[in-house]
Length: 229
Ligand SMILES: C[S@@+](CC[C@H](N)C(=O)[O-])C[C@H]1O[C@@H](n2cnc3c(N)ncnc32)[C@H](O)[C@@H]1O
Image 1: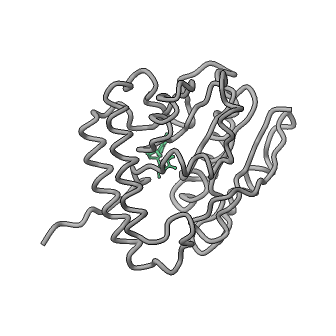
Image 2 (image 1 turned 30 degrees about the vertical axis):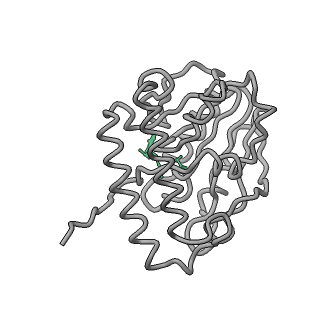
């Protein structure tokens, strides 16, 4: 029997560029000449797609020092483990963007492939190793930061201190705005870290919750936007 992959840390997969556009309510015509950073980008195809369209985009992840082949294999394994897990709890998710598990699988395999192809030529250029709590960039280096599927959903593994530090650090490197998605964990429960983070923001920042046209976890149709005043 094939050995099942046991995932102990954040899963290394990636949403597609199309999911990013919906999750973060992005209007591409407003992003020309904007510097964008995708934090904890995983195997998302967002950077690959945006780079091909001539947008200025950089992706950071803790394990972008690894080889393309290593990451491709990890993505394939984690994706399969995710599909196996979802198979057992399909009814807990909202099937509007994807209509079934097979569609989700094909979509995510394509993201993983697009990521792999682009990472081969972009590693060390637009794909940089970095920790969310200590990013390798000067202050105000980007116009827009995006951070999906790391903060809030892993609040059982990532401490409150990590959440505060990561948000402070991402706000340091953005000139304008940080968008975070999703805010809910499973079964529509909002992470308690959302309030902890927004309650302790510096007076120089403001935040709003914005409804988005994407939902996979029930109640997961909101992003948190934190901006500099
Ligand atoms: C579930 S994936 C999310 C990928 C993508 N953002 C998306 O929404 O599909 C989480 C990613 O966070 C990365 N990660 C975990 N801890 C991190 C840290 N401290 N700093 C940067 N990246 C981290 C993992 O390597 C993994 O690729």
